[in-house]
Length: 199
Image (cartoon, rainbow, N blue to C red):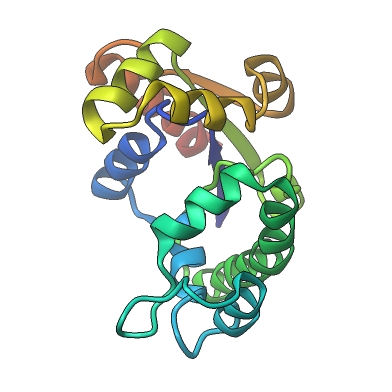
């Protein structure tokens, strides 16, 4: 089984790439954000420590953690962000390692892992290679405004907290330019996937 990590800045189109791969290749897909969301649900490993750290007022009427309130605090309070990450990131990595073991035993051909912090959290240790999904910054900003309704201020905050294009590129084995239309992106994906079939 080949394990491939997908990363890139906010708005670069990582999810589009993952969706295409999931539809067109014999591949298992894991998104670190989805894993984190699952692990912070009541009864899962991150719920109690994160709730304790945040204090009262961060749960809804059903007892679930309020992600919007959490996000607002995380982007304003660097210490809180680091404390929550110290709880969630190791748990997510363990969850993904367990998934790799499970998929290997089931004979899966490819396992793709999408994570914004793939490099920072040293996923190169568990991936065969890393892909960088690149898109021009202005295009990323336009996508975030029109598709997600983000404010310019929120986009600035998120981008400031992420690695530079140079850092992403330096740490990754392969780069996909997702600045244009999806047909061009698909051609790049298919070309790369074709090289594995030759091996």
